[in-house]
Image 1: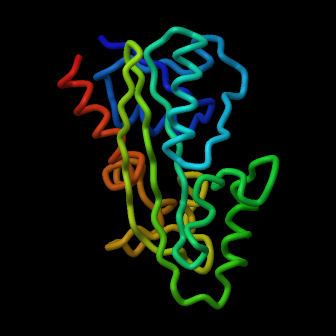
Image 2: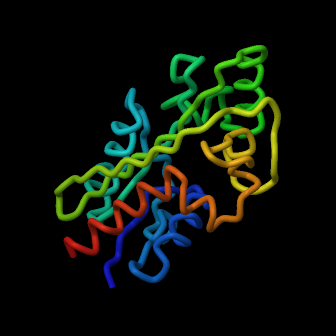
Length: 193
């Protein structure tokens, strides 16, 4: 079984990826390799942050790995919060405060179109690969649902009358940005390794 390290401390992301991957690969977390430091995320793009995290892990720990970065891009906010999604309302990162900030900025705005974007950067034996997942939708005027994390309670994917936070994990994973990017990663790994 192929072993890869997922460069995250985020238990929700780890759980989602485990649910999608099943038993196809052995996925270790940062804790499993005793990496407790905050990995730098200083790039101006989602792709750049994903690559920076993956290279950091590969160069400092010598492991084959993958890292992701995700952003919510809202049309009416000139694609903000984008790369700053996790800390949009400031430090420390707080999902509730981030949601309040975008709802406040969108108050009275008709165009509520948005998209979630996830990019996985995979490093195997010093070679890099990128996998992107996009899902389009709209931002609600208030929160709906208790599941999920981040902006899930206010994001309604196109074609659905419920938010990501109202979906069962399997339903969300089948259409989500992270699910799409993860499936591209899996398909690549199954054909490469």
